[in-house]
Each structure stands twice: as C-alpha cells, then as structure tokens.
Length: 143
Image 1 (cartoon, helix red, strand yellow):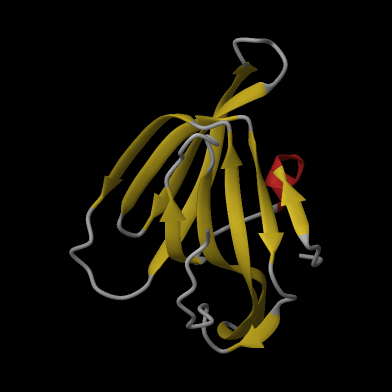
Image 2: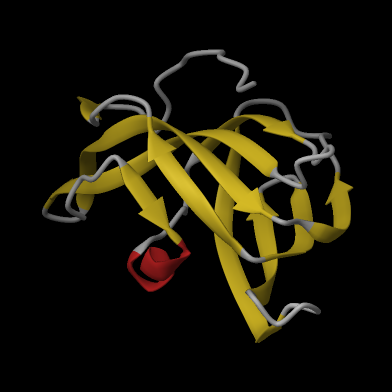
C-alpha cells in the first residue's frame, strides 16, 4: 500500500486493518465522532512463507456523524487489542439527503463495535517505519 498522510471512506476498498493494534477509543460526544488510536500496517514483509516484519505508522482513525453505537467487548484475554476486520454495508441516504450513511462493524479480538456513520478519515501522525512487531509499543491517548 502506498503511503499517504490522509485516507478517507473513498479509499475503503483499498484499505485493510487486520492486526492493527488499538491503543484507545474515544466515544462520540457532541461532535458525533468515534476516534481510534491505532498502529496501522501499511505493508507486510514476507520471506518465503514467514513474516519478516511490517511497515507500521501511528494513525488516528475517525468515523464521522456516528449514530446507533453498539459495543460488545470482553477483555478476558491479556495483551494488545487488535482489529480483525472493519466492514461496512447498507449504503443509504442520510435523513437530510446530503450524505451517504453506512453501517460499520469493527471486529476486534475482544469483541465488536457497530455503528452508523457518514464515513471516516484516517490520518498518519508519522510516516511508517519498519518494525519486527505489529505494534510500535507506545501508549498515546488521542484527544
């Protein structure tokens, strides 16, 4: 995947969040935005059939105009929380007809988060760096 600083819902088909480590989630307030602080994997480096490492960057993933939030998480396991997949379906006009709404599902290794949103923006806070871990090991809370 070619690196860019900003990705949007127009890039959804090109993106994949599998194994992206999640550090924090900010629930929607008056701004109706859900924010995730993630280490996004831009490239997987393989040698034959083994992973040699990843190109990883800290990113802020924001879903916009969020409604119908449902959270079902169970942290019985220890360790990093990571995204298994993000899917979207049920494209439809917003009530005012100005936007397209989608139903998103964020599948984590500890459960699921579902909501409706008009799209997302993912912003890389630094360029990706090669790492032998999927995680950069930082503990930064997104404001």
